[in-house]
Image (cartoon, rainbow, N blue to C red):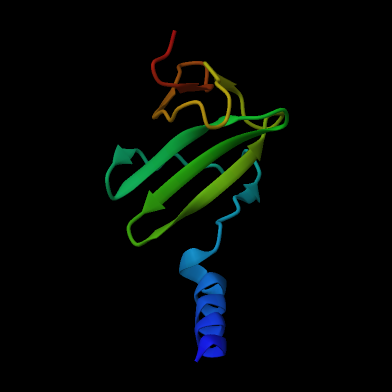
Length: 101
């Protein structure tokens, strides 16, 4: 019986719902801002040395992206994990993590 519990727990840990989601790397041209509604949104999660990170949802689809900082200009950046922000597109075609300065 103990062996069965170990197998069951191992199966649960390997199931897709329990897996840690890794962001998909996309280009700056592939980036989409789906807005800021509960069912359709793109949320900026922060940046590290090389990438900007985003979580997105569009209808029943969703996921996470990372985009090279060289391919997507984003003002008002902050460190990954510090907070989350909606995005605004500025008149100069740059993106800004809200609140924009």
